[in-house]
Length: 138
Image 1 (tube, rainbow, N blue to C red):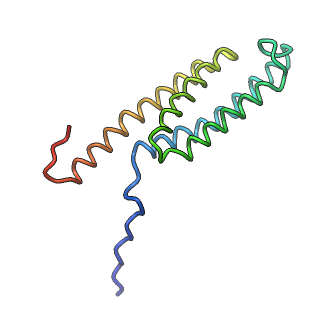
Image 2: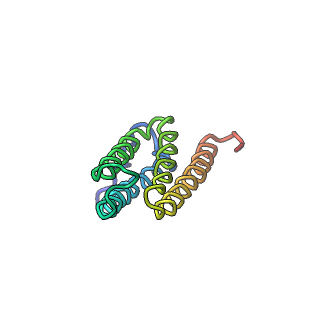
Image 3: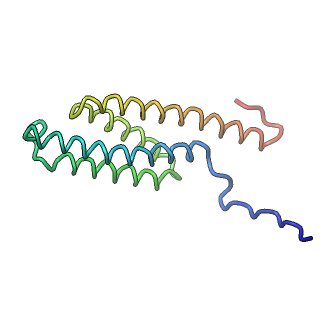
């Protein structure tokens, strides 16, 4: 019988729970923003453009938000990227001005983002405190 070799340590230490949860929320948002941009574009074609904008503007705006989400997803290893994530949550909520249903979508994802930031940060702090014996959790 062969003995199992111990797993190699993860480079850079274990991955943050907050980072993992943030990446899940952002990945789902990419899909939802893509579909929302298609809906807003389809509705704007019937109305002759939303807010007097050209017909292609909802697709271009959705594409910019999607690129921002993907960029943030890749930069979550930096602390400032979480602030960028908060800004994108505000942009998605503000898209409710184009389609009122997006206020609900923005509120749901904003709530999920806030929950993930709070709970993920708490779990990471608890993990750090338990990994360092002799230190009391704050």
